[in-house]
Image (tube, rainbow, N blue to C red):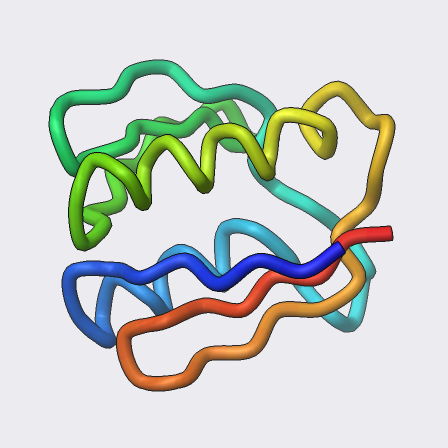
Length: 93
């Protein structure tokens, strides 16, 4: 399954891609969605730190939250992320 998430800008896209998946360790760092405020999503990482990511709009937040939920619940794994400008393409198996 594949989904493109549009972030506010390229910096936010890089931040999101880094938090979602590290290729070398094949690891997903997001463990929980803590809060959603309009186009901002706050996530909890494995190291217990919280981080905010700004997406383009509310529909992108909903799309990301829906897509990442099965990964958080460990039903799926992220296998690749690609940054294209302010978009992050996420592929899960």
